[in-house]
Image (cartoon, rainbow, N blue to C red; front, side):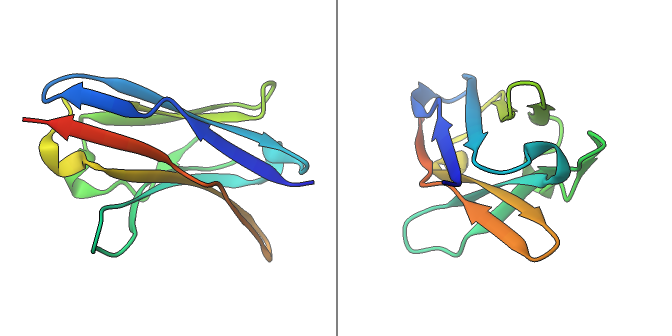
Length: 116
């Protein structure tokens, strides 16, 4: 059974940090590009950043450049999103996505709320 389980969200003050995790199971994690998305209430889902199978970071959203970092641990089948200097506009539900060829998997998301 394919699963992506996000964790690490929560309430943080502006300027704070959070490290989100996305634990994968049921598929060959190593072969999948992992992407973090976010969606705020009433808004469209936004792509935050991706990490390829080679560990290259791509598709970085301009507003998070220099503050967010994506990484992966293939041995643990886990992707991470380190978020620093958080701003109230980063408040959203964060989702991880795994994509390869015609396979596309999503997690249920983890809520991040940044207070001003």
